[in-house]
Length: 69
Image (cartoon, rainbow, N blue to C red; front, side):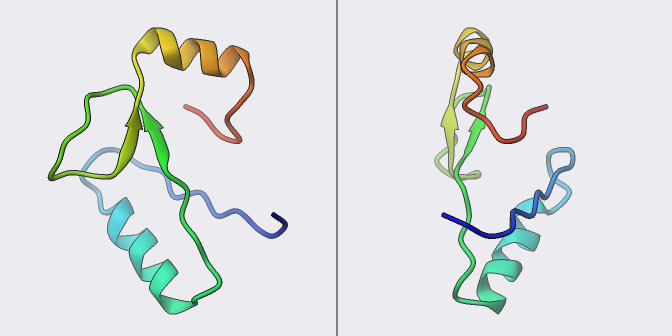
């Protein structure tokens, strides 16, 4: 895939998902990536891959992320 990546970052609850949904809805050629987060899945909350802290550190060492914090 080629193109531009726009990273929307901020603390929990500030509206990142709302901003990302609006950006995606504004143009059909935009897509979202699924985030990897070190907390348990929440059926009501955001859609993400849940990782333990150890799994996250391994993924960082393997350099699988474009952006991590």
